[in-house]
Length: 374
Image (cartoon, rainbow, N blue to C red):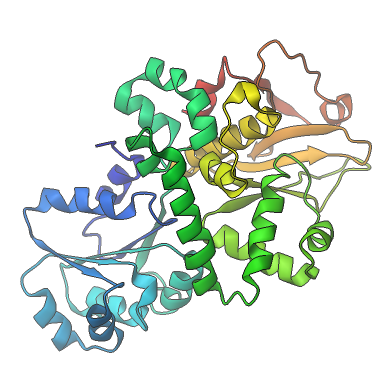
């Protein structure tokens, strides 16, 4: 079993008088992670699944007396797919406030739905955790640096979802199943999407714009929808862990793009499944986009798991000067250009260097990327 970085962080928060909330896309390993933690408590727990109708009925409207009966002498209550349970926030609140020394662990695949259900009742009563597809660091720890570097071309195409990593040879079929069930069924059902065709067109359009500035107006023209619909659907895709936004960095340089944004996928495999392109690297024209998406998504995982205060950005001017990736912390800037080929030369824009104080500047390529993402 691949050890997840989030596991130790969750263990440290156990039995601190608050609920533990774990969110992330479907099939990134939330249930497996929690079950691994629970296995260390000698059966002293109860597991409930929000996908089951009787569980939803019991937990939607309940009392402390009924909950004590359900929990019995168990010390941990694990509620999976909690976003499907009405009033789940109130139910968790009752356990936290009235049934002492019982740890509640909750998982869900939509920050959108789960956050709505727990926000008010659980104010000050929860620790939040987000789980992503497996990270480069986790796999290096699992089978070693050399093996993971050898598998880099494979990762760029098929990504890091646990089932994809653990079942070599079945990647294409599994990714298509995952994309179909998660993108075009789960998200449609949870987001109140009235025009599923638009969502499908939008995800494909975003797949072809990795590394480029995204315009909601232009996307609207491509998929034949208004700007407000595009904003709503992208927000939904972000809150269900399909994509994430990178905003433009802008402080004091003339002609900087201030409101620009880029959109990346949390997983390369999902991106390639959306456009049904699983060709090997030598046969592809989009290696630059694949590499940029891979590096930035892995870096975002690293920052998140380390609880880093670094804020990620990109930079661009109307004259098309550009820096792929920037991090800011304590008024210090770290700037990076992302190039697949180690022999590719690059000079950082003088405009940026002249106007900002740079702590570090570096080109990230396939020869030196490990330190950046591990």
